[in-house]
Amino acid sequence: MDFFEVVKNRRSVRQYKPDPVSREDILRVLDAANWAPSAMNWQPWRFLVVSGERQKALGESYRAVVENYTRNWDEAAERKAAISRDAFIRYAANFGNAPVLLVLTVPASAEPNIAKANLESASAAMENLVLAATALGLGTCWMTGPLNDEGGLRRVLEIPDDQALVAVTPLGYPAALPRPLPRVDPDLTAKVQWLD
Ligand SMILES: Cc1cc2nc3c(=O)[nH]c(=O)nc-3n(C[C@H](O)[C@H](O)[C@H](O)COP(=O)(O)O)c2cc1C
Picture 1 (cartoon, helix red, strand yellow):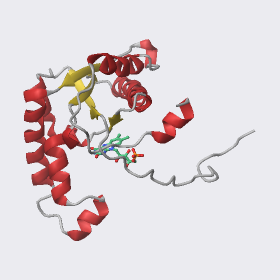
Picture 2 (cartoon, helix red, strand yellow; picture 1 turned 90 degrees about the vertical axis):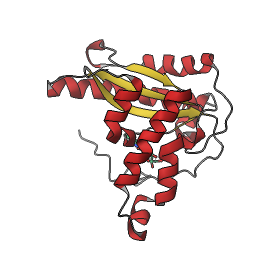
Picture 3 (cartoon, helix red, strand yellow; picture 1 turned 90 degrees about the horizontal axis):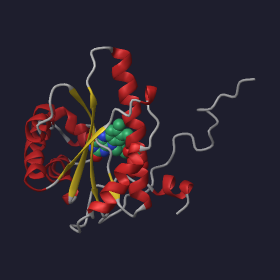
Picture 4 (cartoon, helix red, strand yellow; picture 1 turned 180 degrees about the vertical axis):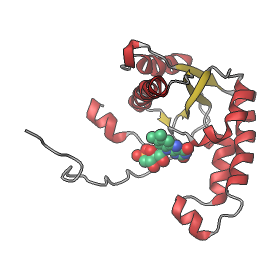
């Protein structure tokens, strides 16, 4: 796949095959993330590779948070979120049965400019990560929802307070690929301003 195909073929995958991902492929994906640009070349990202009992414990913890968050959902709320309450809870509990989860963190900073720079750098790493995974035939789903279970993430993964949480993604072979979602402004007439 050439680069532009990779960009257009990436989907947020929420159902995975149980097949394991090799350590070599995990490292290839993380190496691509590690080559992202970063503010001041700080390369502030850290990656946690999570599976087994810790992944299960994370799912149990996040499921409780989603159950509570969605406890008053009616049909209108499900439509607005484009997911049923049951499916949301199931996905929170098992991350689509992905064999592994990746968690990105950066050094925490009380200085808003530094915190913002670190978040932007980590986002660049995250985008490299999801595209590299796509190029290898792997699926990901960039997720910040689990950050609503910050306590659970910190407890289960022993993340210290001097690290800020950025994102979580399952990683695995897709069992189902979602349809591409239409672009809001496919011709880039509204979103682009050309200035001479
Ligand atoms: C910053 C960010 C946070 C996201 N958080 C979640 C999440 O918590 N749960 C989830 O299922 N998808 C999450 N997504 C995935 C989006 O829902 C998805 O990118 C969007 O619906 C477009 O679908 P596509 O990625 O397949 O093109 C997130 C994406 C981004 C960039």
